[in-house]
Image (cartoon, rainbow, N blue to C red):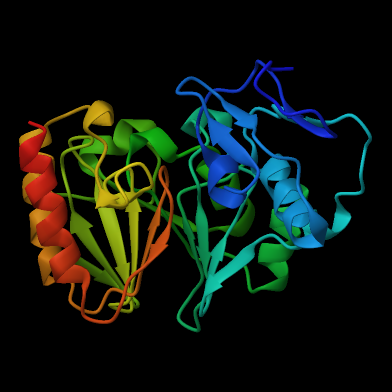
Length: 283
């Protein structure tokens, strides 16, 4: 149990890898030291207790615990968690993807898993009830997690760029080059920078799934990219972010690391220009 935890029922232990997922679910309860998360305030009331339980279930390393065990059934059953029309947050983050978030898209033209959570019975059952999976979109090599198990179970087609495909060598759809690919309501854009073959998914022109490319960064109070987690090229990432200025209709950004965030109507180009300006300042 970490010394920074305030006294009370919930705690974070020393196995925490500082992925930050718990701070995205329950920022009122969890904070970070720079090397780990901790409980800064015990949850007050039903709502805070509920989102704290969700954070516990999402934690990829089971680092969040309770002194007095509470029932987690309702929090478990809430996943996947509705975020927007037909867009869901899966929870059950995986250690192999460093605790990255993943998402589920329900569509009449075929359901999508966007990157992969842990392969758990609860999610498998929910996905079955919601119509199964047709596609599994993988942004890049870091966050494939257990995509192969979901693909096998549902007969879903995995989508990944050729430059990242050594992470899923038997993927059913391997994209090449830098052109835009359209599958159903999804536009797949090539966004090198974080890794060489990183992709983002623009769904129905409104919802942008950004992998490790772009996110809301609370410490900056704005959207941006992670300078200290750029494994290929910061210059390429700046160019890739700048091209997203053309996404005029984006209403929400759903990343893998960093916080998801809503966007005011027609404001996304302005957000991109501001982000690019900041990115140039930290070369």
